[in-house]
Image (cartoon, rainbow, N blue to C red):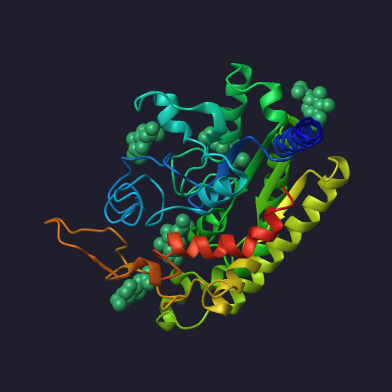
Length: 350
Ligand SMILES: *[C@@H]1O[C@H](CO)[C@@H](O)[C@H](O)[C@H]1NC(C)=O
Ligand SMILES: *[C@@H]1O[C@H](CO)[C@@H](O)[C@H](O)[C@H]1NC(C)=O
Ligand SMILES: *[C@@H]1O[C@H](CO)[C@@H](O)[C@H](O)[C@H]1NC(C)=O
Ligand SMILES: *[C@@H]1O[C@H](CO)[C@@H](O)[C@H](O)[C@H]1NC(C)=O
Ligand SMILES: *[C@@H]1O[C@H](CO)[C@@H](O)[C@H](O)[C@H]1NC(C)=O
């Protein structure tokens, strides 16, 4: 009796073991094991220049990072960004920022999870900042591949993420260019962006993800004129043109790259959060949808500004979790969490 039972159990046990190992193989084959991140403040986890002149947007000062980890990390938010939530979803650590790694000032960096090359304020072209544009970010990535910091095998099981939130357009308009001339410029921006996507794919990264533009007419910097009440539809309409061009560009590339490219639809996910006043499941609710938590007290100051005597030139809301936007451009950690929640289904395609 005992014998019979154990012979019955042994194959069962083996079978279960087999299933478990199969499962592990499947998981590691499917999920990217390293992430390479390019772009701007939407994804910058600590690259941005710490010593920009006073008045320039700075994420290395109080109250950036107050929610997590309690001090500035260089992230343009009170805490985590979308890329941090995506990394967690994929089952890897958010990849380390490149500049501290290359300056080798902050100890040993774990390269197991890839690298983050994104710098706040940058675009595909040169913008307001001296930090590297997207071309230079990819050059730096290419250098690390040449130095065998990352191997062909590494790249084979990697995903690249491109976050472009519109600095090229803000810079273009700051040079006295008119809104009506923007569609032509959009073609240049999207052509340069898709060129960059293809370049990283050609370097060997098998999965390439790029964000669409958000409804930028709803950013606090644009809604401040209506005291944070109404989005500027004209701007959202123009954003739609960029997103359409991007869709066409990515569709074209996908015919040459075995469908390796994917758009992460920030436009739809932002709109979903704004319309639901939180996430679609109702587990996150925002008291302030368009009004940012941290905002300058005049149109020449911003979140974190202080005067010559060190006095605050901004106001800070009591509970950053209650606001979708953290400052005049960027979502709060809770805002990004709600956007992530709206994107979760499309991320499963990775
Ligand atoms: C940071 O910005 C300052 C001022 O614009 C510049 O002098 C410095 O070279 C920059 N640092 C780096 C690492 O690019
Ligand atoms: C990116 O920056 C580099 C170095 O400043 C510059 O030479 C290059 O023209 C820029 N690329 C684009 C596409 O603007
Ligand atoms: C990349 O992965 C594919 C299967 O996904 C495999 O056939 C190929 O040999 C791998 N290449 C390298 C360099 O690891
Ligand atoms: C923009 O226009 C203003 C006034 O018309 C002028 O003073 C300024 O120099 C212009 N800026 C640029 C970058 O052309
Ligand atoms: C900033 O506010 C002042 C006074 O309210 C106004 O005169 C000025 O035009 C504003 N500047 C900008 C760039 O909006």
